[in-house]
Length: 581
Ligand code: FDA
Image (tube, rainbow, N blue to C red; front, side, top):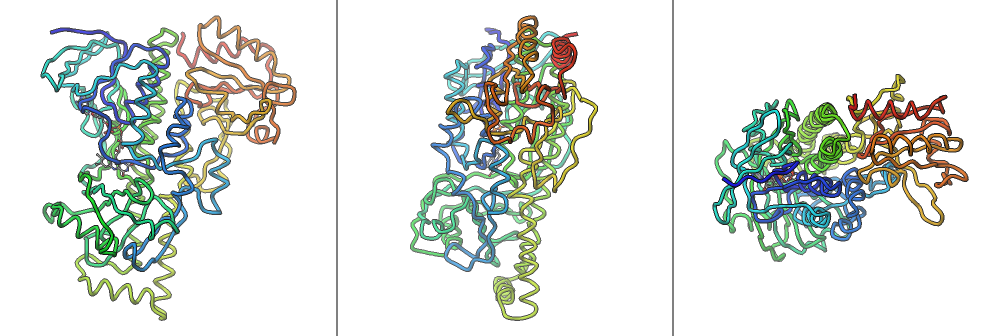
């Protein structure tokens, strides 16, 4: 069999695989990406794109392209609970930081806005970035067999159009091959958790709902209609394209048998949920998926790494599916790139598991808890398993009645909706990943204590392991973020007034170690002005101190002040982080 060689084999071209391909191609790493399907995602699937992911796209130079195609943040906000689009609304929550009490938190945390970018829209943009950077992406090419030894991995792939097989020998493999990962299965990765906790159907459809949504624009509309389902009513509508394209999502219990997915049944369900028989509905595609609560116990096994759904599978609550996948690859790509180029020791790769597995654990637990936390809404609406539609409607009547019972239940409903902040305004979970690993040098100081709920609120800090805080800076007439001074596949060093020795040290150490390291001064008469003083407020170091930032914009090391020999200190830090023993 024909064998071709490459440095990195990426299996899968979903959000995780495409991000890895784009980043590795940008660094000039010889990479082959194979994906069994003939193109990118053919349906909307995941859609909520959080600030950290948009920051990755900003780093890849595609933030504007994503924003052009996605539904913008200001149209994502209203989360509506009602009997139908035309029917009675019960509750509303402003989500994703669009509400008056959360707007400033989201704006202060990042130069990037969240957006609603369904997968079939997002993936082609990442693909384009990868191909522009020269990535070799092979569609209709399925991994059929994979093994590894001390020197590398050996994969057999099949071209699905011709049936021809060939072998790929690579130094490393990234398993980005989704929830049924062949890489994970054949290389013996082990998982913790449970599969099949629930089942769902996604119906992608066209229906002009402008008159029911334009005045309360949002990403999610929860239609709670008595008697339809064993769970929260007849369907959740996810906005794909305002206000004419949707995914109607509904849950079913496999124990009750297969749901009726005939066109007639789905149209009837859509019309009931919309509550207006005159709305024209056209079904585009139907797919099923399962609720899982699973995380890989190890993210690395020898020369193989799992990213994305291959490593973690969980419900869509909190919108963390493709976001976590993109961010896994952002963490792994620079490390593989450094090791393949001989700039770091292979021990650096251990930090991928050390840093991302706890994130995966947190994400699957949070997502499942958020699903469970929706039960109080059903309960406050008076929905009970097995009740008839009449009983359900009577329960809703009571909820809206001028009675003590109605008043009590309305209070319970408000509390239940309040709890949904842990799903829809969960900024700490969205942005607050902090790493402890061999690729971070702890400075012996504790993290600053959380001032607010760590799940709901993001707490920026420059403690090593945290992500670089965002602050707007002035560069001539241009406004740039501190995040723009980092990333780009390079290490960065940030210092301030009096930190010139760091700038010289950075140049010297970068030359000696052969790495990309850019150093920037921030402060009056430095290259970047901290005009608003926001950076001074968050940086937690003296003007003459420095932060060493990794290519994934996490803080690797910091020096609170200027030491006697900054070059020595910086060199030592980089040697430790890059495992250059
Ligand atoms: P992803 O599954 O996207 O990609 C896997 C890739 O691996 C594909 O390119 C595939 O071709 C390739 N592949 C698999 N096996 C291969 C093999 N043997 N050889 C070669 N290539 C192979 N999430 C969410 O947050 N909100 C939501 O509403 C939904 N809805 C939803 C609906 C449906 C129908 C699905 C299937 C999934 C969702 N999800 C979701 C989950 C979300 O889509 C998921 O978290 C991300 O796509 C994960 O991205 P990955 O890149 O890890 O895998």
